[in-house]
Length: 491
Image 1: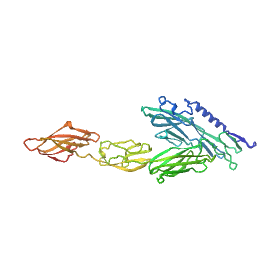
Image 2 (image 1 turned 90 degrees about the vertical axis):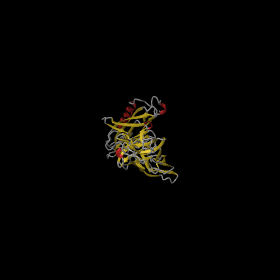
Image 3 (image 1 turned 135 degrees about the vertical axis):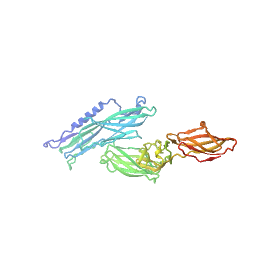
Image 4 (image 1 turned 60 degrees about the vertical axis):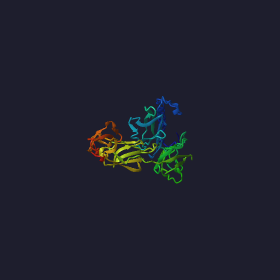
């Protein structure tokens, strides 16, 4: 930037700002030259061997700059490049990120991870559909001094084929610079990148506005899949302009529904410094398209984009009405795999007994203390209940049963039985047969069968007459280890 003196008799009180631009260039050169690996800007994933580089990540920008300008009245304006994108490449799954932001002067560090990915200044979010991390920073310009932060990014993942654990790293920097403009007797002559407008009616300087050729908008999610009738939200990322101050008019937002009466709508729109957040209602059926148009005030350039709304119908989960203690049950939440922010719970009133944050089948085993209780199974999407709460009653095992009496020959009856559950942590098998009449029994141990998944025990007994000279008549019932008795059968 070149400044020309208006009046030679007026003393120049302006502090030099050129030194900050030089420092900025020096920092940029040092950042580039200190890199351990030189990568062509036009490289792409296909140039890297899957064997040599099974997993790698790349930062879209090496440097994000916050330029703060303070005028003679102490008022501050700023120009902030607040967003960086980290892309990952490779045949991988289960990607997890960790960011370490380090103060270059004092070596203080801030850690961001998947468990805690935001604080007052730095944050990140992972877009699984596009395999991209969106990193944001919003420094406090009221108290900001010249500062450099180094951001170290570490990602871990699992190779889909080999199940090998992989790690990849990259880094970029954040730079805060301050300029001070205290003398009204300077006018702007020229600058290759931007101009500093000066108002004769107002004695303050304004933030330099760069008319970037990279004037563009992009939806954070191109196709939103959500539950029919639920609320959706999308963020429109803005490149080369601030939607709060740089647009000729508010964004034009339209929605086209197919069919026309499918219930989809736009609810609200909020403009931020670097993005536009739009919320609405998902269609009940069919499809919808949301169209956004913005026009930049400085050069009247216009950009249009659109994204899709695809509703999802949610089926019922396979939840049993009753459960028995000490048996493991598998419950399928029946939620589409491509939905994010889902959760499933098994609750005892307000007490969470089990929770899952994906669509995997839930494995749950009630215990003996749960007999007589009513549990609930609940599904949530974006912290909103999906459908109804499904009640599950935990009941005790039934008494044993005689399932069949069959005549093997004239003087032998085969008795088939079933018993359930456990007693004192042991199988609840048949303890004894209670027989009255001309009969005695023996167990057929080779005919015993056990279903461990259901804790069901199948046994057979042979009943024969005590005295072959008397009629072969009797009544019989069975008693399990818990002392419970079956119904009486008669021959």
